[in-house]
Length: 240
Image 1 (cartoon, rainbow, N blue to C red):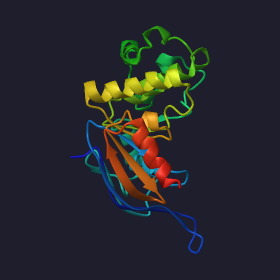
Image 2: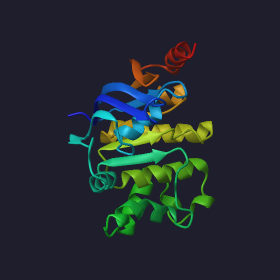
Image 3: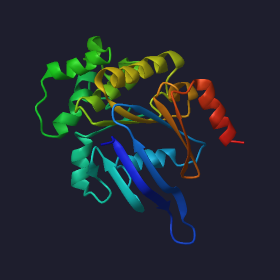
């Protein structure tokens, strides 16, 4: 079983006559316990594919399975339940609640699911991302890199089968980005986490096990264990 399977996925926006096909027959498997980066020129459909794979957007046709569960026509209740357990999501903009401490932000997904969360559990997850000493700090007292690590801890507290990341280093300086990428790499290597990440940065993509390239809503290539130079060269060739 793969972490995510997409079969013949089409995603169309707009009405007949002016409709735009953002995804044009995507069929791909994302392996378990591996990190897949998704790249492509602006407008290639990479974020749409990520959102459809995670159940944040519906598909016009085709099939999507996450951890063996068919989510293609899943109800909002089923998708909500999946997001609280099977699926984790990390955004470029962190999306932390400013009124809550790091510890409270991490606990939030479990509390929304009606679970009582021991403070020790939230602190354990924060320790896993190197922020054991920042549990009581609110987002404004944290650097961008620290806020992103809190966001990763929040996504991981439910122990998701798949972690989706949309430009997780896009708002970070190079030093903070390296810390976050090291953290993601360690999650795959040490814990067998499955990660699917959209990025525009060849250096970030090169940290993944494979890089998937999209153009005009179609998959055009896939590189394995590529260097940042190889990724950058493939992307540059696509943009000519």
